[in-house]
Length: 336
Ligand SMILES: CC(C)(COP(=O)(O)OP(=O)(O)OC[C@H]1O[C@@H](n2cnc3c(N)ncnc32)[C@H](O)[C@@H]1OP(=O)(O)O)[C@@H](O)C(=O)NCCC(=O)NCCS
Image (cartoon, rainbow, N blue to C red; front, side, top):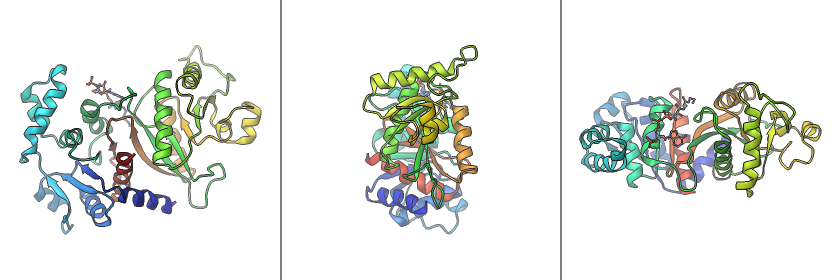
């Protein structure tokens, strides 16, 4: 497991990308910035006030880190003008843009938009919504997609897991989209398959999950979620034929060959899936935490996907190691 995580960092280091960390007022972030720089995983721009960084993380060597304070930086004016251009049609005035550009997360998102850094990581002391909203507003989605989504790279425990042959699964969307439509489930499937290749290094086999396998159950009177997933499977086969994808499946039918043989005979994915798309954020969030806490998997993420440029969110409970890893993942996305 640790060798897998080390491999992510090694691959990132080869790319020489520059990542902005927006929360220079947080000790864990400053420590991570120093370690990333020391280990050559990426070049770091730290958004914050120098004195404040030194105060929260005394004794940390900031050599090699570019520190920028939006309150005093000459870049803030340039970014305010960029923000105004991007948001004027949404009612933003020049005055509002000048104020908003001083916000550290917005400043980081604007650095990314301007091409002054290759990736953005924030969220150690901001909620997911406040971390991602600047990205949603200014970075926007990549060509060919209308949806930003997220996934977790689930790394099998030491000693392996008999169903996880490659040592890695991808679970989506466990953190961002609350209740995706069929079309959005297809977007999540496509993006997660790409992340499985780029970050996970695996050949994706995507299962669209439900409490029903191939029509075994229905909830027509209670939200019609089975139909939503079934339609997504149909739509994906039409619009993304390059994907190895099937559904709708119960989790066991997607994973366990013996169950698949009974419940979904003939499916190219049942019994061997490695990318799992959950029907909504409730199922996804609960599912990844069960795999983590009961199954011993390590959850890396949420990894954001679908942004025009790489931007990732940290958990507020994160530790320095998590930040280092998220920066490495962001650098890999920037290099893809
Ligand atoms: C991500 C999230 C914050 C977006 O919130 P929101 O209230 O929809 O955001 P807004 O309405 O302010 O939208 C901001 C912009 O982002 C866009 N947007 C929102 N969600 C989007 C998505 N998934 N993909 C692409 N664009 C999106 C909106 O269209 C809007 O664009 P515009 O202002 O240019 O018109 C929201 O979906 C959320 O809170 N998700 C759950 C996050 C969470 O709590 N996770 C906890 C588990 S870790």
